[in-house]
Image 1 (cartoon, rainbow, N blue to C red):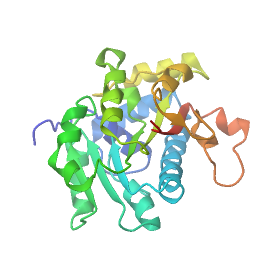
Image 2: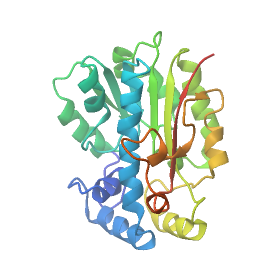
Image 3: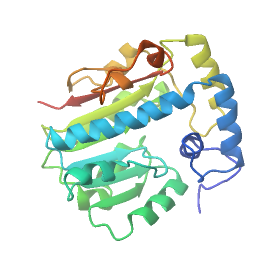
Length: 263
């Protein structure tokens, strides 16, 4: 398969290793362990980010009335995928997953076989026009109706030189009023030295990480209206049950938010 090399670690497979999956290789496990040595609490951020995804999808379906999702950078399928969360509430919700890792494409295709409401596209976030024009996207997503764009733990893989603002502007322009953006992003705000050290180790992956401040991440929502509680550490975004304690928050270096396109 073009682009598939088990000797080169990828973000999706390293992430799969961190969440206890088996769809990874020695290079992914080695990088995953080295990153955990630099940042032992990383697993808490991974789990909290996954929980944020589920809560945001539930909100988008049950409260915002969204029935279409474009989930970019989905990673290897795990528990509580977007289509599973959405379709438990509204069975005919439509979801298109997008990822640039061939192994993600293979696994997602196997998982989604026979579904007429869910699809997977092999494409790169850096090429929004390609994604938006893709036949599989056009077959399931009606751009005349509101769409939820999910960019969960993916924008920190886009370097500043790759013009993330242009990428976001292209998607925003294609989505109708009433659409939503759900986005989460890693940060070094809380423990800068430790976070930068972990990022330096992870830079050996195919997609190095760019850690950004809260203000820089907030700028990705320009042109959108953040819904309550705004851009916060992901455990604080509409938590299930009691809000997390400060000790728990100290271990989680990810911001997240959901926003509406109102104009």
